Length: 130
Ligand code: I3S
Image 1 (cartoon, rainbow, N blue to C red):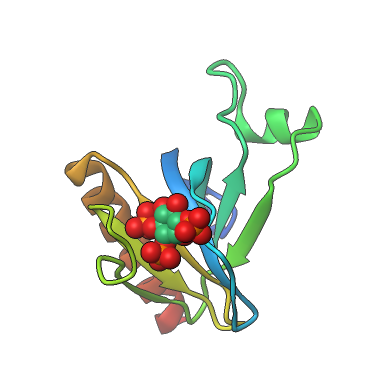
Image 2 (cartoon, protein in one colour; image 1 turned 135 degrees about the vertical axis):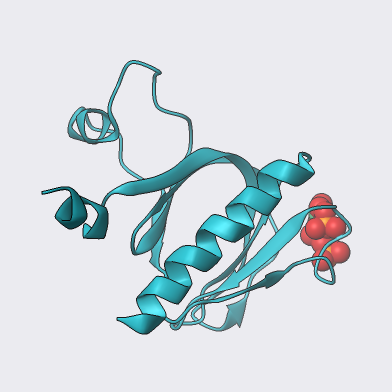
């Protein structure tokens, strides 16, 4: 059952609090609006919540309790790059999805952002091979 579980596109790979702003929606440029987001990376998508779940709750339990993600994007075919040319902030990642949704993720912790970069790259490369 374990390999099957690891292949489940809904299994959480990583989650954490990051600063986030959308910069484009369906190819149309948006005005930046940086804010904190609880970000969940699964095997196929990136999901954004307004606040972090209570420590005690599983994500599924929390979702059932009525906490809806603010947004989520499918990572299949997404492009991942440094976002440093797109912001004056340090440690910025830029993600562009196939439908043209673009956003920046940022952390003041360099190692935290590097770990996110690696985790996102792993998921996107795995989806590319499918
Ligand atoms: O890419 P920009 O336009 O330099 O981004 C900055 C602006 O969005 C700014 O808001 P205004 O729309 O009121 O100018 C934000 O407050 C800044 O945070 C944006 O730049 P950074 O470098 O933080 O991504």
